Length: 102
Image 1 (cartoon, one colour):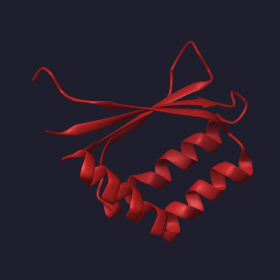
Image 2: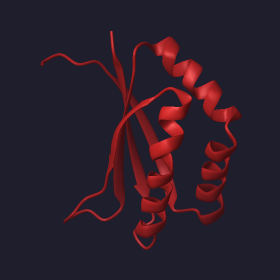
Image 3: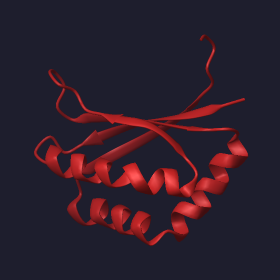
């Protein structure tokens, strides 16, 4: 069963460009560490302090393996550091989804 992690970010509305830079860095890091990155999204109109990401894995165990590889990856840790240093992510929520339709 495929598991998709839905990440909802609350971001600083005055630093959207920094979040976009952060998201673009994951384009190579996440696949390298074993995740199937579906993408990152930010609103085009409306609410200006949220963003979303979707990443799929074959199983929850595969997700756990990915998290371990991510913590050992220099580029991944640098990107986490970039977010912490610049404080553009205020909060983050993760929901684990399973597909119910085609």
